[in-house]
Amino acid sequence: MSPAQIQLFQFEEDQKHFANLTTINIDGDIWFVAIDVCKLLEIQNATIAIQGLDEDEKLDYVLHRSGQERNVKLISESGLYALIFKSRKESAKTFRKWVTKEVIPSIRKTGAYGINRLETPNFVVRFNDNWDRTERGYFSVISELFIRLYGQFERIGYQIPNKALNNKEIRPDNSVGRLFSDYLKKNHPEFSNKYKMYSHKFPNGTEFDCKQYENDVLPTFIYYVDNIWIPEKGTGYFKERDPLALQYIPKLLVPGKILVETEKNIGI
Image (cartoon, rainbow, N blue to C red; front, side, top):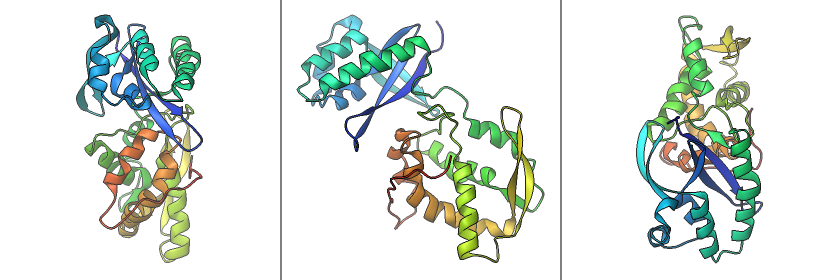
């Protein structure tokens, strides 16, 4: 049996509302997380709906994600269609067309549509490759974000994936690094020049110069990440890259902070 491939798809119900659909490819057979389907179709009693499916249309499965195990019910393609026919939601027909014309063909053709959560995140690879490249008395953006963003996400059950919905690598350190530099120039000019450059290595072997800040800038950096970037920029950054993160961002907020949603994503 080959390893199962877990992917996340984003269904656009309208221009403002999105919903997630988790798929699992097990030995070439496509299965869907039943609770995701029931939420999308607004089926109120998911347990009864799933019980009504044939035995070969459902499967008990242990989902491994972000270092945690969760027991879930999976349904097959035919089970999915059976639930769609039971749904009274107006967009059920649109959802069925989306699954049959986009999701399933894309999985079968390339296996790369959606978000693969089994890949080692480039964020982790780059942290491991660069942690010893900064000088003594200095810190890098990625080294601190690995603790303050990636580590905190992992603690509450979410892992930043390697690539986004558009198949580009997710690199929040790019966004934080650029915006923090602007923040220093505007609010703490005494710190804005307290940095040197170091050679940052990427997984493909290329290297680019990035800033390493003096350690006395660290308290300001921590304040910026916790009190500005996460509450004010985090939602905008992850909204189109990985909407699953939006369920976890509120848990990262420091007391007294509220989320600020932005229309435009910040960073690359």
